[in-house]
Amino acid sequence: MSVFACPTVLATATGILLAVCQPVEQARACPPGAARTACVILDNQTGDEILVYVDGVFAGRAHPRQSDRTCVPANRQVDILGRSACDAWGPFTIRVDAGDAATVQFTEQGRRLR
Image (tube, rainbow, N blue to C red):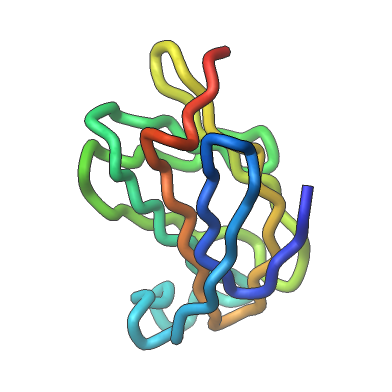
């Protein structure tokens, strides 16, 4: 697992993670006053609904072919795992600082059977 600051994380068919930083303004940061949280955009590019877990705790759904978001504890590493009926993505280990945002993309190429 690799750790990235404010990344867009792409899981590829070979299991290689690619990261691209994204400006916070474009990433739709979490609401003001959400102290000590950071926003993670869940970019689901698949046709499946994906259940998303942060540090092993259910954090929300990534709807098919949509971007959803969830807030995560800021200023520390978190593990993000996606699961559908038959597949899984991750875990991705990322670090997002308070007020920043990161994007995790779930793609067809990033699938792995569970």
